[in-house]
Length: 302
Ligand code: FES
View 1 (tube, rainbow, N blue to C red):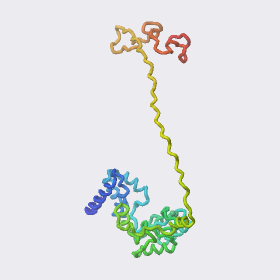
View 2: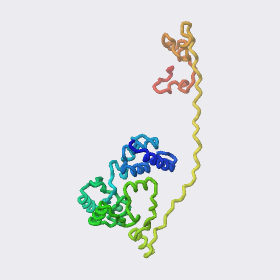
View 3: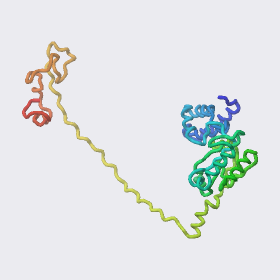
View 4: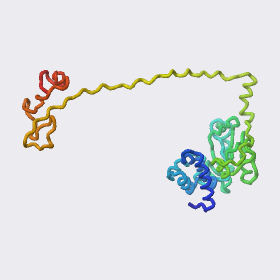
């Protein structure tokens, strides 16, 4: 690993704090990936090895998780991730036009970073802010009801190092690395900035109250009757099979080769000869009525 001693000491201390939150260390992988992003600006090969060592995983297992979620970057991210929602509602409300404008204005496409390292542009899926469509996010802070022009102006300010203010939520936008540390579970103290819901989110509630609308009552299902477990099925005991008479031992037989009912070493006895099955006592119903056995002729000895 290329982390210097000071960074590594800090990383290990933070990793311990993450692991301590969970009964199983490997459950800390997601926040730990954000932690290494807060240092490297992406999930670096060193970051993958660090997570694997801290959590008792293989680098392959860590990579499998890191490559599944789009919030984990596999190459250096810009200082700001500008994400334009192009999911259905935002798209038809102007999201596609905003993305196209920003892409041309910044000279980058999806998941690409401007040459100055300031902005990584992304198409993002629904941010659960459809009532403010079309929505753009900068490091996961909301910029609602955007237009191509307003979005480009925000991007210009970010590249110029000017402070930008989200339209709701936090009062300012932090950097990608700062945001990653918050997502790793180390608060920056700004969680309570501007937390109240906005008018578009409350419009439905206001209309319902003005018109005395209420939701229909919830029909609850009757609880299922308690069913006593059925007693265990007891299988009938198998019929007792009496051992077949031991074939008389010939003097020239090996003492270990003689077992009940087995053929002599020089071949099976002929029908009716001593030791043949004709001398065996009946043990089953088909022995008593041999004609009942499949394929047997009535009266044939078996
Ligand atoms: S579709 Fe854009 S926030 Fe939901």
